[in-house]
Amino acid sequence: MARAKIPRKSTSIDMTAMCDVAFLLLTFFILTTKFKPAEAVAVTPPNSVSDKAAPESDIVLITINAGGKVFLSLDNEEVKDNLANTLNTEKGLNLNVAAFRKAQFFGTSFSKLPAFLSLSEDQRTGDALPGIPCKDSTNNEMTEWLRLIKSAYMGKKMNLLVKGDNTSKYPSFKNVITAFKKNDLLKFQIITNPEAVPIGSELYRQAKAK
Amino acid sequence: MAELDTSSGSGRKKGPGVKKSKKMSTRVDLTPMVDLGFLLLTFFIFTTTMSLPTSMNLYLPKDTENPEEQNKIKDNSALTILLGNENNVFYYEGMLDNTNASTNFRASNFGTGEDGIRSVILKKKRSTDDKDFMVVIKPSDECSYKNVVDILDEMTINVVKRYAMVDISDVEVQLIKATEASQGK
Image 1: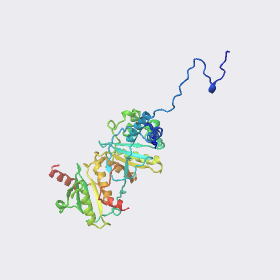
Image 2: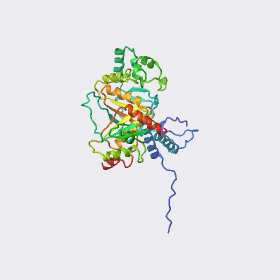
Image 3: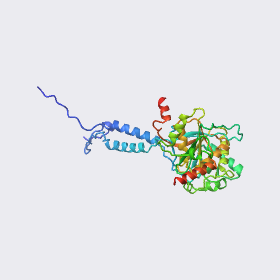
Image 4: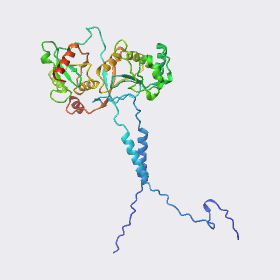
């Protein structure tokens, strides 16, 4: 009886399919990656069990750094333009509107704002700037900022966010809250890093029961 | 006879001196390309930030001058938490006055142990009527932002429905200072 001949197969595999998959995934990841812009104000936010994602548009972000300095940033360019114009007419600051629109954040008193806008991007760091003065009730410029922003948004919904550093002291946070209250802005969000719900706690049991 | 090679394109004939080109395989070894592809893929997977920041909502009460509009807390159903410096937590139940300051004013911490603030809140919550239970948070000027967020988070974890952040009084600041000094902190 003739032996069945097993044909010798080549060991090289067709790589085309694998290559296709690899590059498809690669393209996906390249396109979805958003590079985090280098933050001028470095802040490590605290953890919380909250699982709601932070809003990404129409934000008014107030950053409190480790030294307790307060910074403000806005993302809506239209609002920024409005705000710059109002600042020019109300306070006579003579601001460059284009530079104001481009600025990532603001961290000086109103009087020093024109000088701040003439600085280059990399000179604007949290350490070098004094922050928005909001230490006491007589010179709380944060209140003024928020009043102007509120009117610049013209009743549109804005997301008020507070992002504080772990080590910053409570008074600066309190001053920011006071500024909120004075403007009747009674709802805001605190930016945190996600954390697991402690096992066995009430919230854990509630979440499990659902 | 002399012949002119007039044909072009596909029907090319091999003239004298033209070497027959070897037919090359169209298959390319794709292994290095796959290697490169996966290398980049790994890089982008690792650098993509999957954990987006979350946010917790906080609602502030409206400041009111009129005392009649202010909510009154029932004397014994309230738990007041005070935040000192360096993660120190103090608490008292009900009202604090001169007669009970020494026994009612106690120290706690952010730990999960028996005297941790979580067990304190839970104990108080279980022993009080749900309608009346209220936590008052009084952060002192010395405490850090992290402590404030942690204690607010603790409210979420323990499902405390009513809580408020209130300014600390001078008496309480003195008590915190005295306690911290006696503990050598």
